[in-house]
Length: 171
Image 1 (cartoon, rainbow, N blue to C red):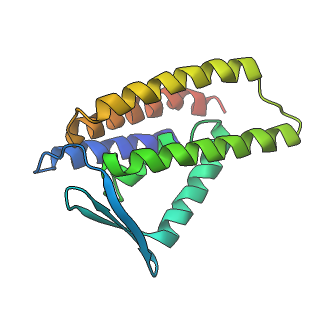
Image 2: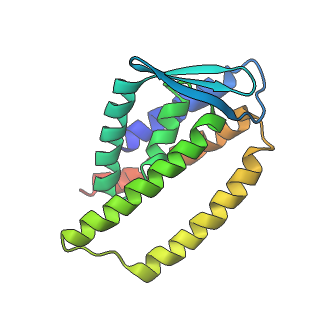
């Protein structure tokens, strides 16, 4: 797991350094499905195409890994979508938040059903911290070029990869 995160961080760093144009905040204008492709058009006339079966396979794998490690799937999914899949940070931020919310609710229900109920007080405090972080991140995202956002995500991904190395070696 740690090596995958480090590889994703390197991919994002290289990807952000190779960006020729400086992209500023853009909103999704249109999103439609055409056969096996999801086409996303933004207000800055950028068009992104995503292979739907590949996206489903990636999200299933991220779900398995996220559930096994107890981490949010978006922390793995975002670097994959921005790096190898080439999507803009502005395009993926909203959908990954929705995915995180839905998957978290399903995880709470399943773990409770299996006899491992979550600590509600601990979860509430982490949720409050997450809400503040989402608010500050939304404000910050509108003011930063995409290159800086990708470098920040690469740095956080690299830190997660390095932090998880000693944990993996103890297993």
